[in-house]
Image (cartoon, rainbow, N blue to C red):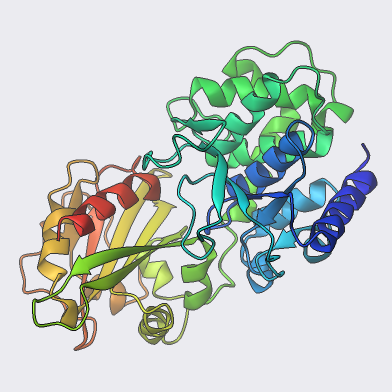
Amino acid sequence: MSKTNYSSYLKSQKADFLADNGEGWTVVMGNEAGDLDSLASALGYAWLRSNTSGKAIAYITTPKEDFALRAENLYALGLVGINHPFDELYCSDDPMPSQVSQFALVDHNVLRTTYASPTASVVAVIDHHEDEGQYKDMANPRIVEPAGSCSSLVARSYQSSPNLSIPPELSTLLLSAILIDTHGLKMGGKALDVDREAAAFLIPQSLLAHNEEFSALSDNQQITHIPSVQSLSATLGEKKLSVSHLSTRDLLRRDYKEYAFSMPVSEDATQSSDVIRVGLATVPLRLSAFFASSSYPIKEIQDWFAERDLSVLGILTTFRNQKGKGRREQFWIVKADKGIAEKVWQGLESSEVLELKRFNLSKVAGSATEESEDEDAEEVTSDEARFGESYAARAYKQGNTSATRKQTAPILRRLMEGL
């Protein structure tokens, strides 16, 4: 299949799906953050299911206005001939037909409440996040297991269907997601055996194979030394970090997930529970650079807080220091009137997974300069810093630089469920 044919196929699928009002179709959706892994996994599994289990379409959870926030997604799509994603892809701004009742989840394992209904069923799950234990009697396949990239698990599903060929465009998209999620299959990093095996399977079938001859690929060293793989990985990484032009609000919504928790209220309240909304934004900048992204970053954060009706917002940063070492920081804002701030601080600060060490909020919220690289700086002991009268806020250095949102979200969920 040529790039033009793949683009035409996607347009045709979208038109047929909408013409059928979704009846008899399975909607394959990634998580709300809309990163390249979710996008590639949705497209990859939709193709597989369409050729093995009936009509299926990938649902891209990124709103049209947010596509420009992820340069790496646009680059990967462009590589495979998807140059007008709003026309070719079924996106979250497009209507959800009334007859849709079957969903397949990739890169997450719980259907968002927006799509839940008495008639909705989850018929498949492929994910690499913590298993929340749902749809065990309903989903087939139901694959929830560790991997550096969900796209690796999708690629493995193709290996289980040897009579089904995978288009080179899809191979390239899945490979791109694996490379960006595992930092080029870096040894000692996030890549697991399933990621290396998936990459070895995909490369000979990808568009990269048009430029190079590949013998049988088996070990990680052989894969990571292929010039075209190195080049693709480096370019995707550069695109992902190209965020200097984005505002504070753009950075918050670029890689964002939201969670809702029910919290019991007092006996004299008129309702039985109160909904606590928590947002987690991953930002590829250190906190000092994040707070320098706009003229009024605090106002933009407060506006986002209000727009999403949040009770808690966590900003999880990832960056490299002056020596090129990976570092992470976290910044948390809690609505003061919810009465949960102290429990949130206690839960976060006691986590052995995150290894958080508090530092002075004024170092990031009050200055655009880079804070000290001193890893042994004394922990802050002053009173809790206030992010305005209505909020409590704390900043942390994260000792465990391997812990991402994938590890932070379950900690937060258990914390909220224990309130």
